[in-house]
Length: 198
Length: 149
Image (tube, rainbow over all chains, first blue to last red; front, side, top):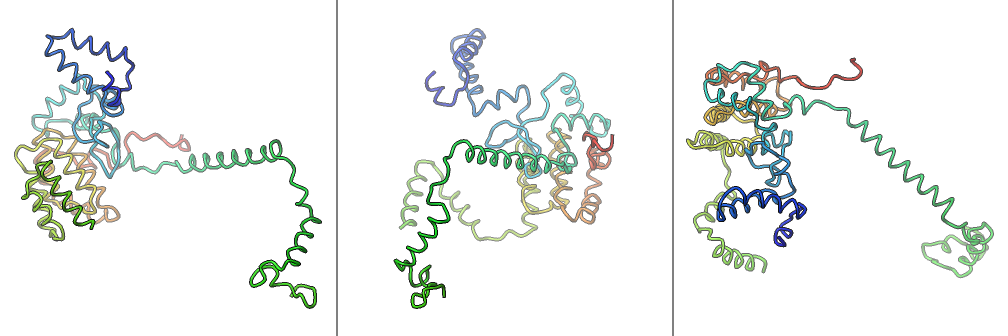
């Protein structure tokens, strides 16, 4: 069980025990062990997509090898069929093995919808999602402004006394007197012979 | 330095992974050689018309092709459709047509009729409907705009 946990098992212990018990009750000791392992592997693979894919047929290689469905023009053939297997669709697939000319247009369409969720025209249709994006951005900005306002009002102390005009003037005077940064900086702009700005 | 280390590592790995030298050679030889358009078409035609091809391989080939910066030639499209027929999957064939149409990009007005003209005999033969016949050139199940209600 520990090794399963290491392999990324996210099922609670009880669930795993139930699965194991169900598998054991099916057949003999050897068969039970292999079925057990297979079930474990199935339920512990990746991120649970295999469980979520349900009874859908796995027909290809999905994103990172997981059996997942996506409608995307760069990758138009996803790993699983979109709908789960039903008796009706099984009958239709039987019919599909024969001549396709005998299939009606509706049957062709429902076979397509069994395999895929949206057509190209549907998933490439322009959606006004930019409105949502702008809305969320504005909300985020206003929230950030609110935080900075609240912290300025309620959290931070007043500015130190040295931020007064008088103190800053005194500081400037001292910088000039000490001739700080005389080549390119502040003091280089001060004319010491005439005691004023150049 | 890196080259010698990499070379040594590759030799060591080759021993462990069991990659034969001929396979490495084949990969190395591909490097730097340009494949002509005809060769490319031939390669994919051969890929799709292989006898024991299954749905997984068809999807892999089509996904690869539709991910490239090319419009599949009519020959490739036809052999893809025939491959779909052999694995009895009409949904795959319709999706493949849609993908090829999408690949025409900005030149849909000129390229798509040309492709359609070339592959029409195969479509007729197999009984695959065109996208227009299915009504899939426009969104079928899209929601109505709230401003049109």
